[in-house]
Image (cartoon, rainbow, N blue to C red; front, side):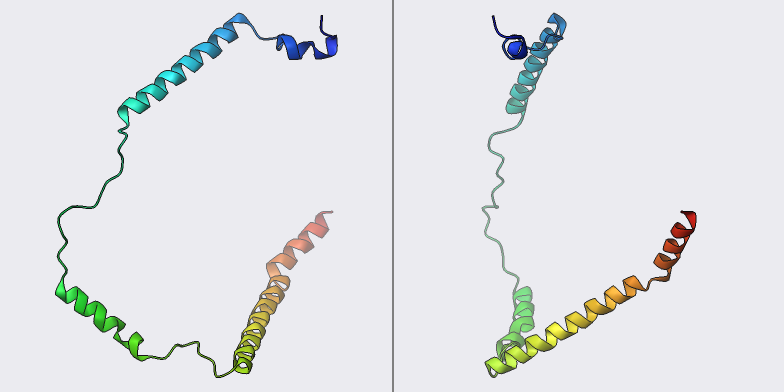
Length: 126
């Protein structure tokens, strides 16, 4: 005989009825049948391959792409730096600009008149 503290671990919950047991079994049968039906209905080979016909290359499209990419072949890289000092200076300038932008956004959020009015009304209601 198990102790009363652990009796629910060995015998199951006391409130479960035979009807609930039957419902649980029928639910698992229904789920099994649905899974079997899905396996029958869904084909196993769902991959759709590329067409086997060789694709024609449009000469006009190829010429347009080549003309569009031609300037990139002539240009120097846009992010080339003369030295490490120039790179660090650009990072400092970029960081300063971002800091100013974030500071302006924080100030604008703090100085929002609608927020101030909401706070005033909230204080008046207290």
